[in-house]
Image (tube, rainbow, N blue to C red):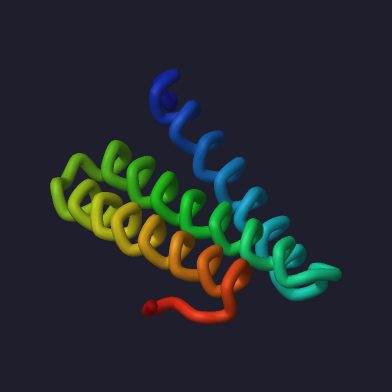
Length: 92
């Protein structure tokens, strides 16, 4: 019999995967570039959450370190894309 924590982790995994699927759909069919950037931003955030939930599930530090790397790279890439959409260039 599963414990309540195992059921909650399974439910969280399913929810994050569904959110990632919705973000991927918006990324592919987004009507504008701004919608695609927002979908990509939400997609890396869901990827970070997936790594965190897997880290809780398996109890290893590797997933938490991966989540930190995903968060840092995702934040920098979102800022770069937003700057590119606003000004047309990334480096001034």
